[in-house]
Length: 271
Image 1 (spheres, one colour):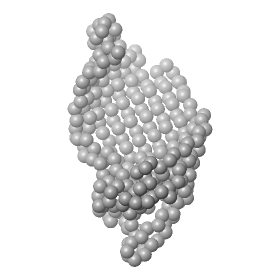
Image 2 (image 1 turned 120 degrees about the vertical axis):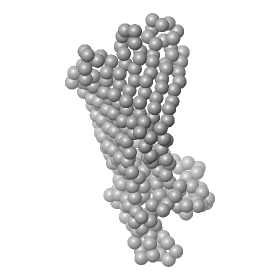
Image 3 (image 1 turned 180 degrees about the vertical axis):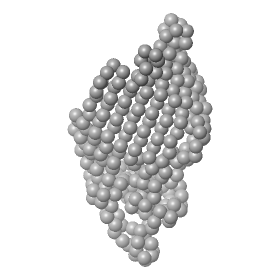
Image 4 (image 1 turned 120 degrees about the horizontal axis):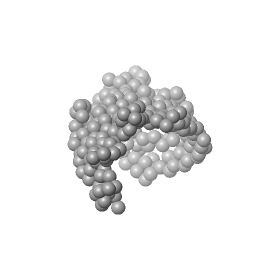
């Protein structure tokens, strides 16, 4: 178990970009504070299975949240969310499915559930003729991936002439997540397949034991995906209603494209 507290101050760039996305005075920002509680456990039901689980619950005050002010602006602006909560679960499993037939085979799974919501925050949106206040209480904090899963299937030859030769196949899945405070527009989720092969010369090879050779292929299926996206600002229409997803999709400068299929190889030396 763990109970911790944290304190964070705005950076200099946070203090001098206004909510309009222009250089100016944003020094009304307050430092954020938080108190968090973690509860975790390790369990080894057998010599071939290891399980780790941790739950967390964090209470934030004046959380510093950044988002884009729109097109043709100098950058993202930062504001204080008066109160928010982060809670979730982190799970990890390592399993040797065939310890006798394939002693070098392992399966590793890791999963994260991350639920972050505003518990006290009212946002004011304006257009050329009017301003409206909208409560964000209970809304998801944008930019937070709620579900993340990584599955890796590994094999390392433990002995014989091919000792040290190994590799893995990895599947990474990220859930869709909200991009705005009103929870109108999401960035789509994606799943990627990565492959890797490596060679660690055994100790009997002397100095060569310090070398690690590897070659990997990332995004094997050459999938087009959004690797990351900055939060975007909501807007209010002339009738006083918040703009929907169709309007928000016209925002630019938020999306960061993922890498296409890529090949990497090399050698690392341990001293």
